[in-house]
Length: 95
Image 1 (tube, one colour):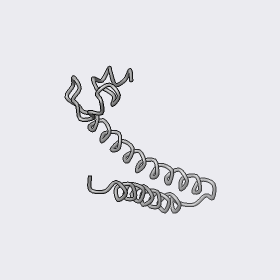
Image 2 (cartoon, rainbow, N blue to C red; image 1 turned 120 degrees about the vertical axis):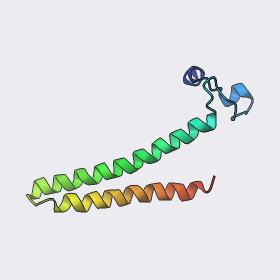
Image 3 (cartoon, rainbow, N blue to C red; image 1 turned 90 degrees about the horizontal axis):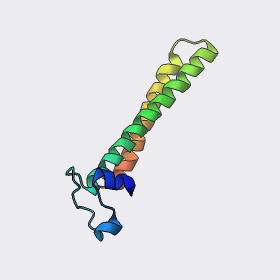
């Protein structure tokens, strides 16, 4: 609640359920929620790619190969990240 007060956004209990009320900086509660979702989806996409690159790099170093596993797991990590974002977006609907 302290962070909401600093940002100028009132909580639901203080506003009586008015979630669309604008704060002092012109941002509503929905704006913060949407921004949080964007950051979450971006983090999921990047983290899946980073994990894939780390696994591929580790396998290449351990087995002494050329960057075969790095390329393979980079692609798999990218696909996994896109699938996570797609799954979330299809669940959220056209809102």
